[in-house]
Length: 301
Image 1: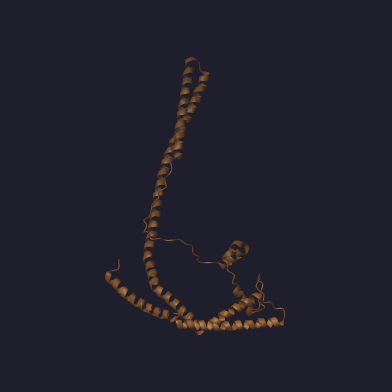
Image 2: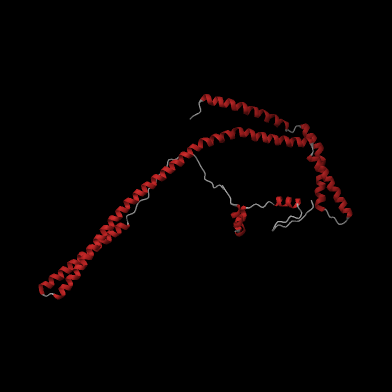
């Protein structure tokens, strides 16, 4: 049912108020993370020295060699300097404010977008589903009608085949009877003389011709029966034009069966994600823990 002009205006006014309110909040939060000249000056003042020291850290890391206690002490001192600068950057009030503000702004923008996407996706689903249900029902009807028509077509073809096969059998019977008469006439002609013998031979020849003709007809009827088949009937179901896609979805897993098969079929391993981080946490909680096939090594960070 189309949306009336009044309902459109009412819905639009209601949504417009919500959207405008969200836009106002987003605008304020955007201003809060704007990098002004003052903020830029503070960041340059506090972070420029760190940027300069980072060049020294990179050079020191590229050329570090620890072969004695003095080298180790110097490296330890540089690590402490890096930790200090890391803390300065991570805990910097202005930079942290910008980061958290951007995070809030991102969440707000996602929520604002959802004001449009959420309702439209909901309404789209509500509208599509009855259409898809109708299409599915029409497909079932078309399949049922096609099955009915194909059954009728097959029954008709079977009846025609039966008729042709019956005609072929009748011709075989005629052929057999004519062959029998021809043989009897020839046996009788072998014992007869004169005109009677000629008559019987002529009768045998006529029976042969009748048997040959019946054979030809029987072959034709047999071929006709073999060529009689039911045409396949296709029934097209009406379509709505709504685009759909088919996909497979896992609805249940028998883990006992799956893991048993996993041990025997290497191809299934690609479907399993091994959570090494969970193993490491388990080992940290219980140092004596052992997992078959897993090698742990304690490292220093």
